[in-house]
Image (cartoon, rainbow, N blue to C red; front, side):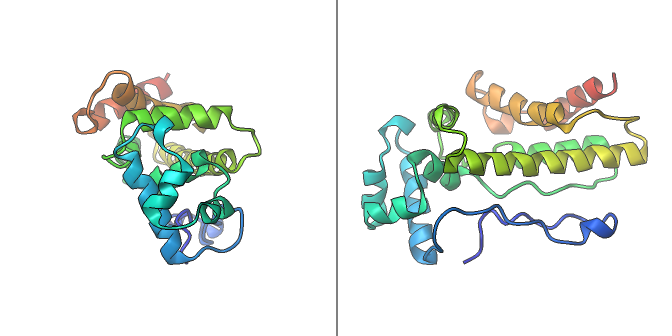
Length: 213
């Protein structure tokens, strides 16, 4: 079956960019496509009508009409299952010709990163569960792989900005990625601002202002 987290190929920009990105490693045996989709669909459905704490593996199994052992064969915890069910396609590298355009494009992909039916309570509960999970857990490993991919995309965007003269230099992509993900998340979760009310252009301008210093 297609790997949902197969990283998309990047735009050509030299010999090393022609190769496709490696897929994020899975844990466990190959999955049945139909059952895999049913389980993820059931988890997403429950995430749209329940708080994170109220969702159980038993509930997902009943919703998907599969055995609980089938779910545990592929996902080691509720956190890893809900994370995979609610995370969308990984970032693609934009190349609009300007840093502002590229950042706006990234923000459009990152905001919102969760399906509309998933409440902020699911987001908060999932993050709390991820933070308390062991570093070598399936959920943390998947989260780490996705973050590394996002960091690589942001780093390439910043390198493109240096090439076209929008930036003189940059030290790290980590802070830029934190602003790209953190600002919309804070506004959505803490300030209750709807995703469609956020101005990606204003956020991009604030990031550029900080990078230019």
